Amino acid sequence: MKIKEKHKDLKKKVNIAEIERNLRRGQKSWSYLRTLKKLKLKMKDLLSKK
Image (cartoon, rainbow, N blue to C red; front, side):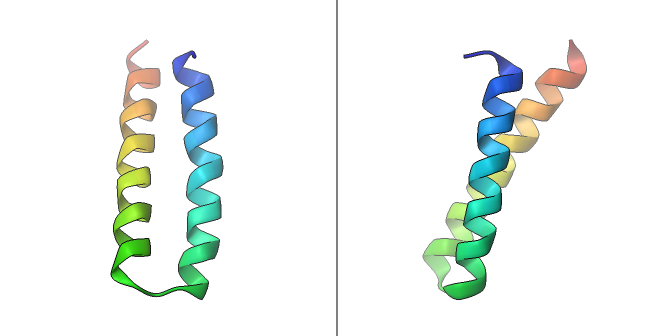
C-alpha cells in the first residue's frame, strides 16, 4: 500500500471514529481516536517530505 492510500484509509477511519465518539464518550473511544489521528499525521508528514 502506498503512503497516499494509507493516508486516505486512515482519514476514513478517523471520520468513522469521530462519529462513534459523539455517541460513546468513554476513554476507550477517545484513545482509539487519538491513536488514529496520530497515525494519520505521520502519513501526512511522509507525504509532504516526498
